[in-house]
Length: 87
Image (cartoon, rainbow, N blue to C red; front, top):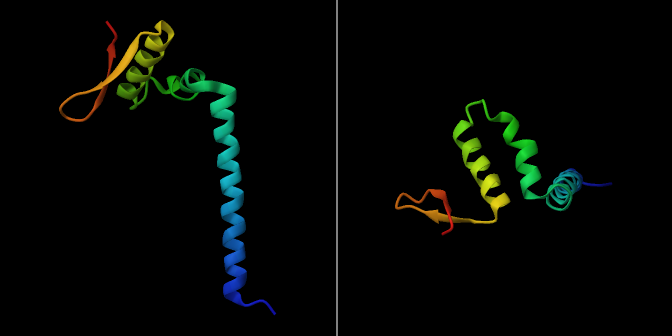
């Protein structure tokens, strides 16, 4: 007869494996099928008029700059990142 602890361990392993597989498949889709720019356009830009407005502005600038192929990231003294045009 299987002990209760052993059965719970297998159930936890199975649940974690299924969730890991789901997240892995979603990650592969986002990285290899969508790409970073399409991922941002699909999942972040539709929420531009919500409370995420500041984040959306950063994403839009990143997409515009990435399309120009002339952007760099820099950090200010507070440790926050900002997009800066390459000169």
